[in-house]
Image (cartoon, rainbow, N blue to C red; front, side):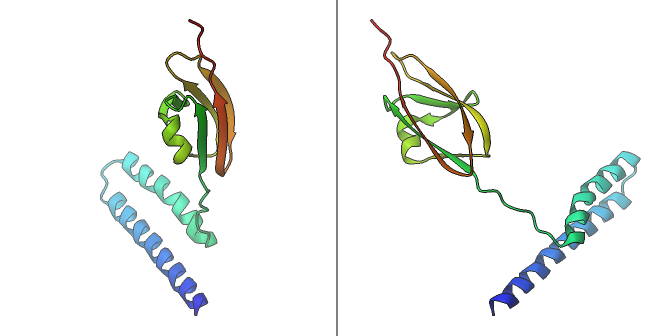
Length: 135
């Protein structure tokens, strides 16, 4: 019974691809410029390639970053963008695409900490204690 569902679902996916291709071809045939027609053909190529081999796109599991920092009110920046406070990210990891990321942890009254981290699919946990700036 489960096999029937998988076969039926794959037929639905193929039908959706065909519908998308038909829509793009209709749009291109009404296009008045060669550039619009080239854009339509370029959009069709990946769809046609996937349809021809019967493959479905592979979904990559996201990389999740959990930072446990002292102090808890430290700000976490990933690739120079604010990701959240350490308190929040310790409880709810932030999702990123896998790869190397530049992580900065900083808080008022403490020296900032920079580190390059390779994020792999799944959860990566960092534990950081910031050093206080002397008075």
